[in-house]
Image 1 (cartoon, rainbow, N blue to C red):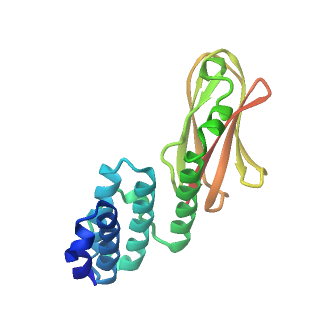
Image 2: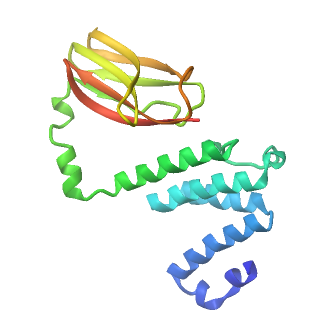
Image 3: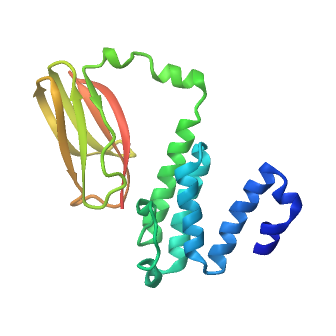
Length: 210
């Protein structure tokens, strides 16, 4: 089957079918136990593609390939994007859900995006940045840039809206501040963190704990 996808002229002479054939070859490599070839191909797609969809699904397929190879082989595989390789299927599935949700969110129509952006950055009292690292398993850090002295509150929430942690609360001067999240007593999963300024919710972002 792999040889067919590599040599069939009708596949190789069409950009669209050739792209599909390349994906099928990667699946064949996983089935044949040629994990390094598959991982190398996923790494290359993530690094070189201009398609967010291709990059997302390459990251997901990389995680699936890593699970298929088993823990005994993982130490022998070279991978540039280790953040998409997980020790358990549960961790992988949490990350897969997160990646797909982010992809769907990025494909909103231009009208929806413009609606979300009513009130530009210059109107904000503070800017909330994506936590790093993300995903993470023990600790991560959130940066907030205070543009104008104000009262802020940063909360970590379950997807249900239940408050789990308050990372910061009080009056802050202008500047860049960093707050640490510790996963003690928080289960694996997808969570939200929110920034409120002067009592009004300003921004919300997702994070993933595994």
